[in-house]
Length: 252
Image (cartoon, rainbow, N blue to C red; front, side, top):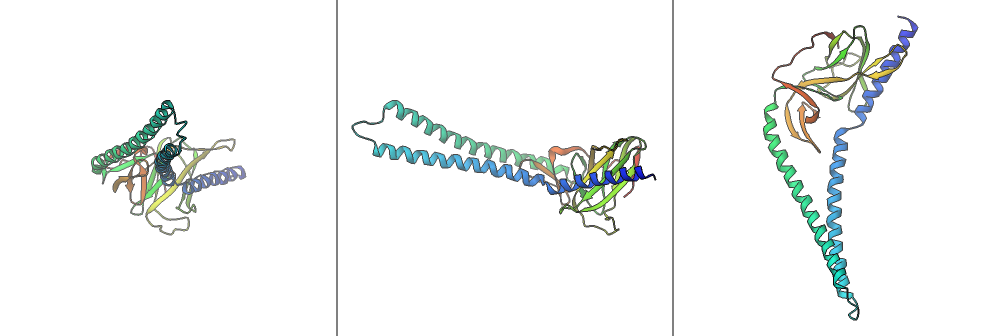
């Protein structure tokens, strides 16, 4: 291997590792929880404003100057504002209730997915029973790097491989770079390639795994693949039996 090829390979590995670490460190579920918490906080604030407004209005009526009472127009406007805030609080509560009922219904219908094989467009790689796999489109001879990070953002596995033309499948046996068997769980993965000029870029890929459960996420329904929780919206295909790649395969 030439010096230039070695340099490009090292740069490719570093790019893939950085991307996998970034995915591990940015938790989608935490962001969703923050968004949900923000929604709850907004409703609480609205309810507090409603109570404060009522207190202020009552105090204003109690302490108004008898010789110069509040005009009927002003009083009517304030009552209208009061009613509007009350209605908005109640509307938000009813909407939250409807969403909860809808999610409960979807949870029941999605329970039939358990035991089936799913593919998903996500950087979360589920290691189940000591095995995980992903697929990507490649060109013959294309150099790709695949990096896997654990939940702490530590790179546990990285490989450089030569792709085949068409669909390629990379299967991981769950061992780290030192040959140690890792525990099943949710890992983060990245796939990168490099151009002749040395520019690295992402390679779109999908992961596959067996659905072991379905549950409510912070902002979306989720499928569980062992310890990996993946938004249902990221699932691209579900089948009763796994299907292999037709064109190429890289080792673990």
